[in-house]
Length: 170
Image 1 (cartoon, rainbow, N blue to C red):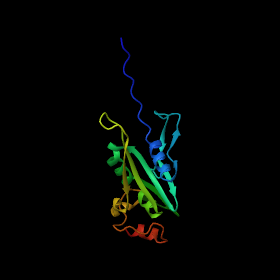
Image 2: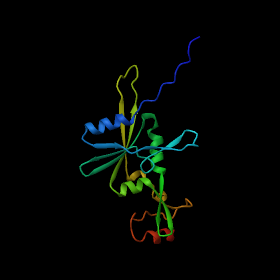
Image 3: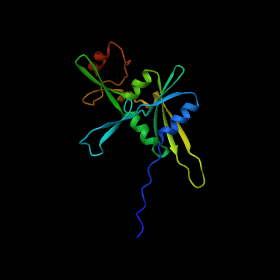
Image 4: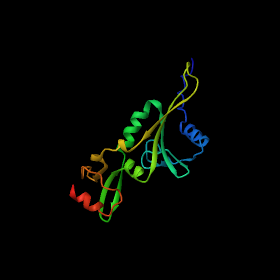
C-alpha cells in the first residue's frame, strides 16, 4: 500500500521580499514575531508590526512597512490593513485609531508584496506590489472610541493637543 501524499509545505514568501528589497538597496528586517503560549491550540500566535507589517525596510530617509502574502491574498490583506486598529491612551481617555492612519501620519510607506508561484508555463516567481496610501483610509473609520462607534466625520490631526476635545465633540 502506498503512503498518503505528504502535504506540501507552503513556500516562505518573506525571504523573497527581503531579498528583493536588499538587492534594491534597502536595509530590511523581519518584524513579525511568533508569541508562544503553552495552552494555545497552535502553540501561540503571530504578531505583526502595527497589526499588519511583516517587514520593516529603510532606505535613505524613507521607511517602508511591507505585508507579505500570496498574490491571491492581496485583496484580503488590503482589507486587513484598512481595518486594523490600535488603541491610544491620553490621560484616562482611550481612543481607537486605524493603524494605517498612524503609519501614514508618521510618514511610513506601506506596501503589500503578493507572490505568485511558478507554474508549468511560467517558471519564475512573480511579485505584485500594491502601494497602500491615504486613499485607503476612510475618514469615517479613522477615529473611534473603544466602544467602536464613530467619533467624528472628520479626521483630526493625529497628535494634536485637541485630541480629547475632538473625541468628545463626536
